Amino acid sequence: MFIPVYLPDDISRGLEWADRGMLDVVRLGSGYESRNTRFAQPLRRASLGMALETAAKRAQMKAIYRITREGLYSFGARDWSDYEVLTTSQGVFQDAGGGLLQFAQRYTEGSESVEAIITLLESSSIVVYDGAVQLTLTTDYTFNAKTGILTPVGGSQPDGWTGRTYVRCCFDMEELRMRGSSRNFWRIEDLSLREVPLEEEVP
Image (cartoon, rainbow, N blue to C red; front, side, top):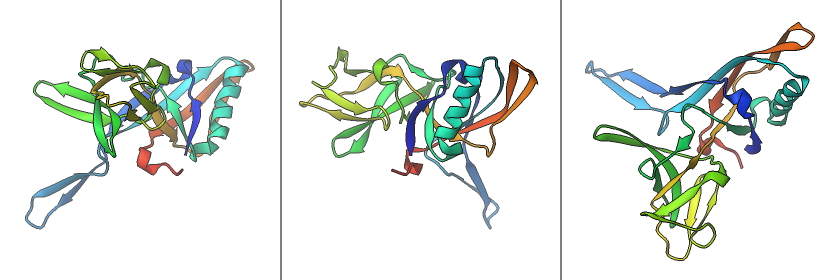
C-alpha cells in the first residue's frame, strides 16, 4: 500500500540509482538459451550512505522509516537522474482499458524506442496536451497522481504530457542504522530502496 510520504529532496539527491532488468536465462536441451524478464520494464534500486547533520534530519529519516513500517508500505523518492519529462515526444499515454489512459515515458535511441509506465506523479507539475493544445484539468481530464491513470473528459483526446515524476519504492533492508562519530555528526549507513511495481501494491 502506498503512503503519501516522500523522501526529502536533499536526502534523495544522495541516492545512487540503478536499473535492474531481472532477467532469467535458461539453457534449453537444444543448447540454445531462453531469456525472459520477470517484469514488463526494468525496476530501479537505490542505495545511500550520507551524513545527517541536524537532529531534525535524523528525526525525519527515522519517522519515514517507521511510518512506512520498515518496508511494508511504499512511498515516493526522486530519481534525480530521470525525474522530468520535458517534451510530449517523451511523455505519452498507453491504453489502460475502459477509456482510461496510463501515463508513460518514452525512451528513444536512433530508430528504436521503448516505453515505461509511470505510476507516481508530482501532480502540480503535470501538463496534458492534445496535439499542440494544452488541455484543462477537470474540464478536459482528471488523473490520479498515485497510480498514473488519466480519465479523459468531454470527448478530449490527450496524447502527450510533461511534468515531474517520483519512484514508487520501499525500504529494502531490515535495519535503519545510524553511526555517530561525534555528538552532532551522524551518518546513515547502507540505506537501500527498491522500486515497487503497481501490481505488487496491496489496497
